[in-house]
Image 1: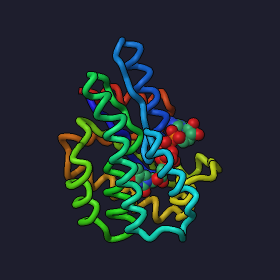
Image 2 (image 1 turned 180 degrees about the vertical axis):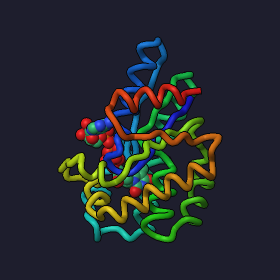
Image 3 (image 1 turned 90 degrees about the vertical axis):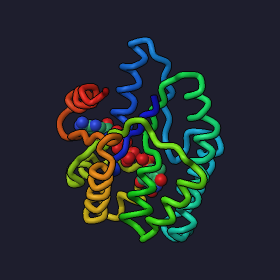
Length: 199
Ligand SMILES: Nc1ncnc2c1ncn2[C@@H]1O[C@H](COP(=O)(O)OP(=O)(O)OP(=O)(O)O)[C@@H](O)[C@H]1O
Ligand SMILES: Cc1cn([C@H]2C[C@H](O)[C@@H](COP(=O)(O)O)O2)c(=O)[nH]c1=O
């Protein structure tokens, strides 16, 4: 089973991905918990290029190519081998992040995002949880981690609202794969909603 967690910056994806992995491990399953951009040594190097780039270093097209190259390596080196072993794979972000951040909210690269995905990735999660949260709340969960996430968070409330709309639009296009989880309330409350939405 291949599961992705998606959503705007600070919505609680990493927390919920980790909690689901812990719950599944407690029930005896082998689980690989991973993330994007990154998840494999090569993809983590590409993540550093994106982080160190700052806002001005890469054009939107180059940035999309870097995210896609990182994903290709992650799929080849981590996700597919884990699935071949029969492990569960839980990833904190996958292709829907490119669809929304690069394809919908930031630049008009939607067709290129899909073309690159079809040519080089050709894999979708069995199940995707979009952790949905009002950006006023996620931005309020103030963190200053100094990384790529801050770059997008720094683009403000309007941008984060566009991202949220993008994830909700994707969910309505693929209801068989994507479950929207209310990300408000305590960690425990959100974790219970995720578990209740597992098939
Ligand atoms: N339900 C919750 N209520 C309050 N705080 C939360 C909740 N879930 C997570 N947090 C806190 O909010 C912050 C962001 O959570 P987390 O890192 O899980 O989000 P994220 O969506 O993975 O963020 P990013 O995409 O920016 O990496 C963390 O400090 C985390 O401890
Ligand atoms: C996979 C992927 C990610 N992004 C953006 C989304 C976030 O702002 C950062 C990653 O930060 P996180 O704290 O690790 O979630 O990168 C993107 O724009 N496109 C992508 O494909």
